[in-house]
Image (tube, rainbow, N blue to C red; front, side, top):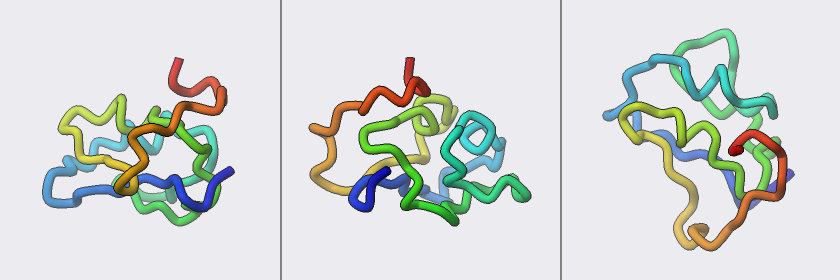
Length: 78
């Protein structure tokens, strides 16, 4: 798990489809909502981009300077 890697949601773009919440296996998002709130951001696995990969409007990014992070092999991105 990581304290420097976490999803940043642009709520002005988010369509509240819930795809990111559904795909996340790390309990990062509040599953009781359709709007993706990262209530457990510290659970995000370093380099995992699964939620951003399924976002139809590309509303999810990661901290600045994190583009060199490679997935640690959690299996979500494959």
